[in-house]
Length: 109
Image (cartoon, rainbow, N blue to C red; front, side):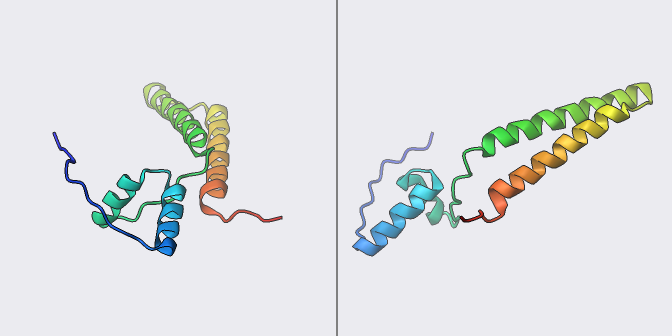
């Protein structure tokens, strides 16, 4: 079991401290976790938008449905085209929404 029992104190000026706190706030992780990641050569990412997790759950549901269709197609040597097309449309829409929420810049105004 790994223990973190070595305290480490360092000082920042006001500008550095403000920048650090802002980055930590954007990342959604603790100051300690942020510093640990930086020490390990990683750049902490900003926290995902609030609806990211609900979108990912939806993608997992759609993926599960597509997997069920694939299993049925292999077993019966036939595919439910309507169900497949419906779930592919859901998948495409979910990917579009996630892309808008996570990757594309937000619209102003």
